[in-house]
Length: 488
Image (tube, rainbow, N blue to C red):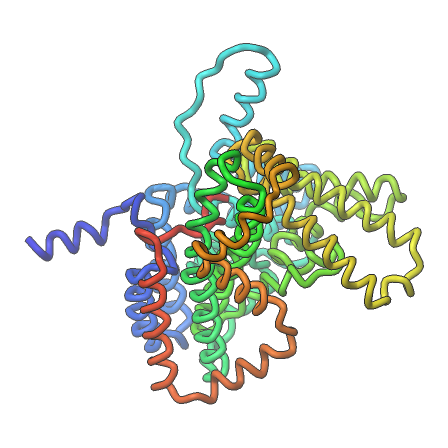
């Protein structure tokens, strides 16, 4: 009976218990995977088959039978790309390219935007439509964009198509980055599959350091402060301006720690297994200008939007006005990528306007002016609060809630709430201060911290990890909290 339950659980998908990086189940699995991997990592075929099988299993445990969608998209894109590359007729090549791009986008569009489209069509026409009972597959936006980057790079001639189907499937499905990025380019990852993997002790230690860093960000900071943020965002009109403002600052830290924490763990797991997944965050709240924020935030997506949308639209090559329009369109679509809601469109569109204003500002103001220290402080305050303010539209459940929060912050600010808030929410405020303070530690400090971590004995590391797990248990809310970007 006991073994039957274990086998049944192994082959069953439970929507309420997805396989997440911040769950004990995942780390038990990862230890098992590493134990096998240690014996086969130098054998290309065995390594590829083993990790591909686990990656598909990982996705199945995260998203159920949507794994069949993933497999279909992989097979379709692999063969269409190969035929596109081999086609001698330019018209036929272009037709295959259009099919290769449009089919994954149509699949993504159906799951993510079908009901949103019907909502807006209903509002425009006054007609009532039958909505589809659609569940968004986990990570579909990420793996679709990853596949599209491969297809476009091959079509442009930047890379040759991958001749090994197993390697291509492994590139798309590699479990650390499958469901929430980074969006890894084929030019970075595929060459690694053809080399002999070497497990460097320094890189393994760096990977372990990144995993611990990611767990602290996600399971301690993000998950704890989310408990207060969720209360306020569920009913912003019921709280004072100060309480709303604290929830807004809290969410700014929460989404950074949640998403960059996932990226840290994904990149760290990759390093431990001998793979380089690039970088996805670089202290974005240190940015002095909005352009720099997007060079630091979700780097794999922002560079994807730049290379496959902004530049093909014309970039800055077709005059000032067209540059501003291209920036606006790019960020508008970037906002829509995050979710089927006008809130995300507003969020992306406002960032596009911010980027355009910065371009105009650079033309007007002398470069020497921006080097002034006082101006740098002023620029940081504006950039930081512009980004934080727009998180309202990203997080609020409805437009009504977004406007209610804005109204409370600007019309119901009462200093009398500060002291009671400190008395009731001390740990929230302390984590908020610690989270932002560590974010603003100069970047050059981290290599030193990494080297210090690598030098300490494994026994000390193990004790530290046990303490970390205990802290996670003490601070966690009921159940394992999913990552924010799983919904995208």
